[in-house]
Amino acid sequence: MDLSFTPEEQKFREEVRAWVKENLPQEISHKVHNALELTRDDLQGWARILGKKGWLGYGWPKEFGGPGWTAVQRHLFEEETALAGAPRIIPFGPVMVAPVIMAFGNAEQQKRFLPGIASGEVWWSQGYSEPGSGSDLASVKTKAERKGDKYIVNGQKTWTTLGQHGDWMFNLVRTSNEGKPQTGISFLLLDMKSPGVTVRPIKLLDGGHEVNEVFFDNVEVPAENLIGEENKGWTYAKHLLSHERTNIADVNRAKRELERLKRIAKSEGVYDDQRFRDEIAKLEVDIVALEMMVLRVLSAATSGKNSLDVAGLLKIRGSEIQQRYSELMMLAGGPFSLPLIREAMEAGWQGNFPGGNPALAPLTSTFFNMRKTTIYGGSNEVQRNIVAQTVLG
Image (cartoon, rainbow, N blue to C red):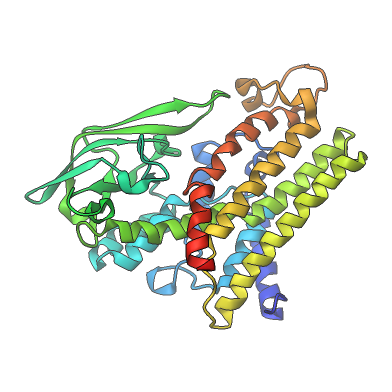
């Protein structure tokens, strides 16, 4: 296993760093470094900047309009954008549904959908989870009934992240009740502006609007929007989830947030506390270990060897690390982490509460928000079972 980067790879890193420094808007970087809320314009604005450069689909092969980067180059791109304070690329389009369309869609679907994803112009949402069908995704009940050249869709999806911004949605729908639950699922692309689609916000504890319920009431979807074969959607869903779980690990964001944790701990006077600094050190060791796991996968990919199926492992460790650094930030701020007036934060003013450091205001909100990471994308308990079966045998 060779964990050192070649001179060519280091040169590539420097080119990416220079381009990001020149093109990433400072107001967006400031929001990211200080955990301020990003608007749709912020997220899609950065996506369009990347799209114009041809880097939004940074993991795509050249045949589909991507840069055709190696696994190492993709890793370096992710690291440099994260450390610079770029927002995470909203994964539903370029990271999740695009590979499914490339692998299982027909030529007409690829020509129709991929350009809008690559440019950042079309916002995609994910229609997987339902009430009662989260980690047990095979139990989805949203029904799609074939009638001529259309499907009639009825049902409900929930926890649809940023679905209020969605233009299109990829859905797991039930097209058959025969056989095993997995065998009756299809993968359908749906225009969210279609009659019968209702997006209802789910307000979080801190007043934020991140997730939604989506209802389908006799929504007509052209049969040409079916990806692959009917009742084969479970295969396509698993292909997509491997990309999602690797994306959740996000070791590069963890490295950036580790530095933010240290800044907060120093500003609040707890960095000199030996026991607190020990907790930071343990977190840093875990982040380095996660990075080594990622680099191990990259080393195997570049040498032509088959890497371990570690998507589940990356998801488990990455999500636990996200929870840990958000908890330590909140503990560093202590009771001063509690006050959050969302409107005041958006205006750049948090009020004269004791402590007076506005950087502390989002910390408790972030801590509670991060409770989700060990659940979404397949709960960690289920992932451990999968790892035990596929990796340990």
